[in-house]
Length: 179
Image 1 (cartoon, rainbow, N blue to C red):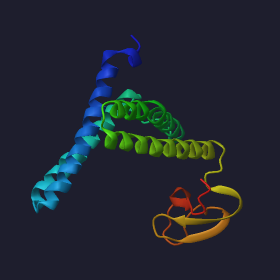
Image 2: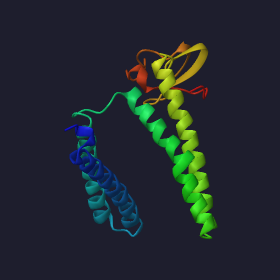
Image 3: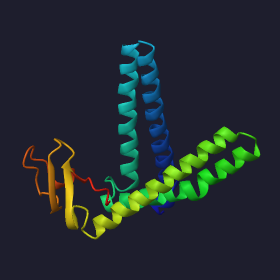
Image 4: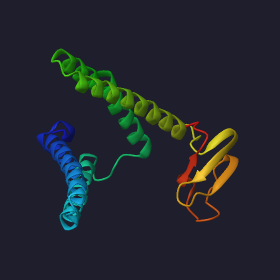
């Protein structure tokens, strides 16, 4: 039997989604416990959220043979998900909310669709830049900043290594907004 079409694969997907939802829910609960002055409860929720995230990671990796796909594959998958959200999922949710008279919810779904559209474009641009080996290189001088220490470097390419903190090139961000 093909693993991807198996019930086991579907169960791993369900467990992954459930663990992600639990992690998020526990983060929200921790924030509320903090607001209520219940720090020990907030910390317990935080620990449980961390554990649920680890469980989700294990389930996702099992779906992919024990390792996560490459960054490029993940960027493409993320772009595909965001595309589906803004072109289909949130559009239908907004339409349903309008039909049912929940205009505030419809407006929220419309805004979420706009955000998903932006995320789709960002992921596509990052994937294209990575696949074309221009993620850390430009054709003109660009301002690059080290995300770890804040070192700023102006050049056509981000430095291979930050001269201040030693972080690798992957820690540099293009401040021009080009990608």
